[in-house]
Length: 243
Length: 243
DNA sequence: CGCCTTCTTGAGATGACTCAATGGTGGTGG
DNA sequence: CCACCACCATTGAGTCATCTCAAGAAGGCG
Image (cartoon, rainbow over all chains, first blue to last red; front, side, top):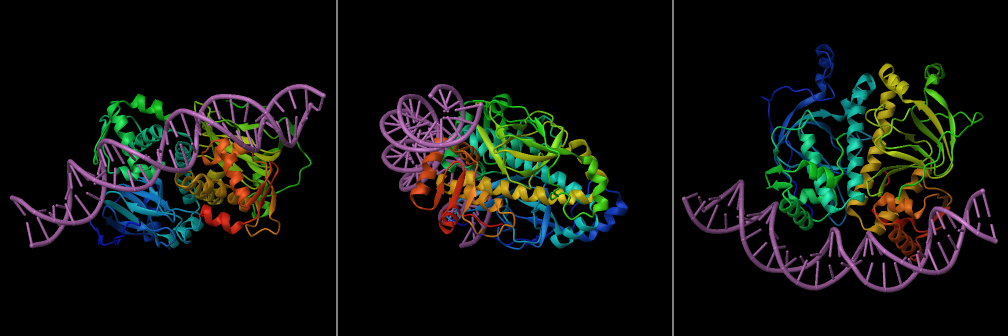
């Protein structure tokens, strides 16, 4: 049941463009210099690689530059619950005690590029520059809201509604500005197993439910792409609420 | 299906003891003076009263002094998902946009005493005194961890494990210092419906599952009290992890 | 005492799961 | 370039956990 784990940080990429994540966006350049020691490097991770594991001490937290990552907890019988599908721009690896063992695992769904921060220094940053706590608080609050939406979904909705909700969620979050997209097709690297583990059903049942949505003409779907044909219908059956 | 809602703030209590919640605990008194304008009053709320409602603009956020509160979202068909059982000491009503419509509702499970804060002023506080963002960040992170534990439970565990997990969670959280309690009996104001809505099963099934645990000799249970007889067994079947 | 909410229990229905076998697809190496 | 392998998707059939409906009992409150 346990997925084999490959090495992490096998490659480093030195020639990546400089980006600013939400933790630092808009900070004047002279203040940013102070934080430059936080940033270890930009890392390329391959699809399927484990970034950090529940129960282990992870030296780094990350900003996701590109690619999709799943955050999950695992039960003894091997069942997994995906807590969040992390999309580009997300902060990965924040938790109550930054230097304690991780309370969940992170694995790359697609090839991924990450910016790594030393967790110790991040702790220092929050202590010395409390204005960054406010930024992190905003991020934590938005992840909290997302988690609560999923809790409603997993705890109280039918499987069809859960699938529809998941598709709409990753759809809208993958649109950077959160406006309605021009194109109705996006790259979609989630496997049916990933979908199942996110919404608390089996892969077999995820398959049947997806095919129902496909036959209804609401979506089109392959391993690599997702096309949403009937937004209104999906929103209706999933009770999705734009945040 | 919709529960009738009674008025809130029907009574105010002027003679309540001064307490310090986690947002202000340990702050020197001279700094606390600055924040005194935040605190509106201490309020007594009766069991069953709605404190604020999903979709409405709530003027206050709260610290829970005594009693239990449920935070929940509601679907169109009337089904509810309880997101968190709030226990004394908890901060209630924090969300990404403090002054936007609430993303969930709050209702008193037992008679409750609350300390109210103006949400506008709380926003000011975070802006002007960023050290409080760090405190709020810690609280938000611990609620996030709890939410993720429940997501694992609701999404991936059997109903028996979910019930056991819930009982252990409220048990340990109700022990202020998080150490093992002397007594194995606590006051327990949750109804079977509350339990069901927290873990995503029906009330009827919650009843049967509780009775299974009772017959196994793991717990004893009435509407008002909970006795845990076999901690080890509950921890084992629920895969509960002390945080 | 009577009302109303909560709990209890039974019986039948069903959504979701398990097991299992087949087919497709992409990557890798000979 | 093809053959093989690993992973993922598909489909069927039978089983099981949980739900629904329903009715009665118990308990708390005015």
